[in-house]
Image (tube, rainbow, N blue to C red):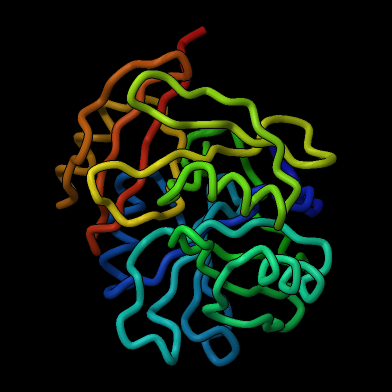
Length: 258
């Protein structure tokens, strides 16, 4: 089990959360599929926001739609770590992103902002306070991987390099454009950048670790979710793409047995 209590290096995916239509339905679904338990934050301060925990450690967040969002995107949002939110926000804007929510402080937890990159993918940034982001990794129920599926592959890579100093290792193959990225001070590859296909809107994708991908897919079906991509094997494990109660997509992956 990997446990991390300190802040993540700037540019690293550090947190995910989602706005949900029916919090109780989403709790039930993700508890069944990923084994999550939940901890509520103060509703008077945080608008019904609650955290998913695994083995007592925070792994993700959920909330009713934020005030002011008439039609919130029911999609998992990835937050990239930053050391200084105001400086990062200026840099992100100069690199060409649009602001959705300007920098805001969330009491002692930390500070956040949300943007849309120049290709159309939405993401957040997080400056740690008491909440540093994921506390758990490399175990079932925790985030395994985050990737920006951008509308223009080269423009997307250029934006994140300018805004967060991403460096890339190209993994493209015939019919697929993809690169993994690293960040300064990071101990391992931090995530990926790929190109959306078939007219799909750009987005940041999240994949969660499971013990058995096929069993997790069956739990999704039993809980009322849909399967977008049936389980298949590749060099990093066995993966499938599924949906939750608000038709939000996410991946589930079991690492290779070895």
